Length: 333
Image (cartoon, rainbow, N blue to C red; front, top):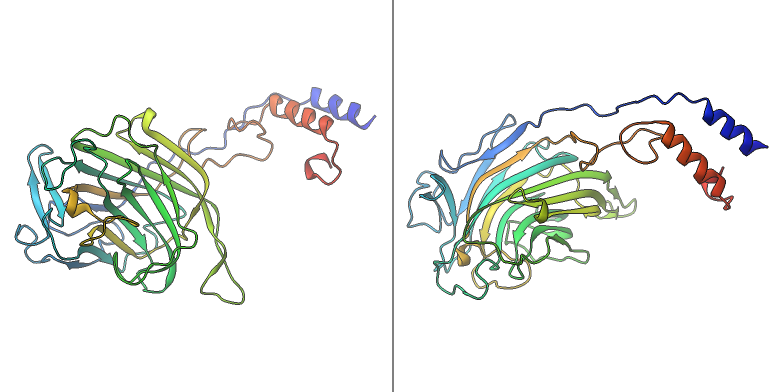
């Protein structure tokens, strides 16, 4: 009798459309285009520059491992992070970043250049050499989660999430990663062609991290987020990862590129060795603008997640309830 009454009520429901989404434009929060040397810009400031292997006052000097050069194919200034012949560690770091730049959800975009004109180039794998592109970390030198965007020697292009890392700089300290996770594209087949390519990463928090009550320096629960990686705005090179291990928002240190001499395995930071150039590195705010976008928040009752509560949702609710046979399942109560 109870189920009969339930379906009678369903038949009286008005098939009304409720749209939960508010379309909001993305806001540029941080930009580094190398048209003004190493200086970055943004509404929260560009950060405090720290360069190893370069000169803040002389960014265009090609005698340094880290320098800005003009790329004729792109028609703009770009970053050289370590030369193919580099024998010294080098990095470009932006400290004291406002925690609002990297929020619970956001978007990173950048351009990277695949090159074939460098010592050690492998013609059998023209674009699969590793490169380090962007890293967000606490910069404290203590155990803290961080993430980085990278191009791997296996042909992957993706993002890596780490926890419990000693990170004094992009290559400093002794890394410890019991739960290092790599979220990456399938190996590019065919591999990416020589030239410039666009990289886009979107993240949206699905669970906040929880610190351990006994040892607050570690996390009892890791941050989770939905991730989407897109290469060259190509639907065939778009990859989504649901509830991926992630890091808390607000990391105040950005590393743009990094070269570690002699490091050819593990965490790859070999942009210099492969002559991978970088440009137009931007962090944006992010809000979903269509129903199937990463980070969409659905209304209670939107069973089929189409961003509207209609009679179809009530019908699905009724069907699910009728099929319930587990008294411990909240859906059945």
